[in-house]
Picture (tube, rainbow, N blue to C red):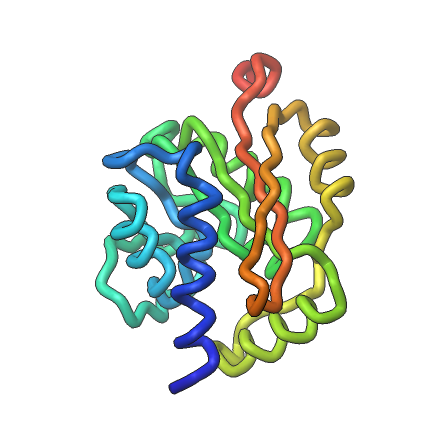
Length: 191
């Protein structure tokens, strides 16, 4: 049994608990950066949602609906086809500049966006790098983590409305997370 076999279900339950007030059963949800689909499938069951995965590269090991991204910053979907788009520990795998591009794309294809992202602690960075390299050696890990204040400034500077939720991790779980619900502002809707 791999360490990820233990931490992945714990992480999926933590994400589901964090999102339970933001995502409704039967919502159509896009999991951007779904990776191997393991967390996506667990969230589908835990939240009772319809889920579609999307990533730059297809390396699914779970059977979920999937569509490959056009490029690093373009989602292959029409406007507002999803109730929610989610980023689960994904945004730190792309450049700072591309983070806002992906968030704006997610807001284009869905009504709401959820973000569940690692806090930039030394332990989180080390474990995230190590586990990701074991999981997918080709995965980009540019260490583009943001503190909560930097996420919030990014949202404010781009006219994105947000709500923040405190994520309480189990005592034995080595990661710390920040969580956000993003919605479009009237200014963003006109763009």
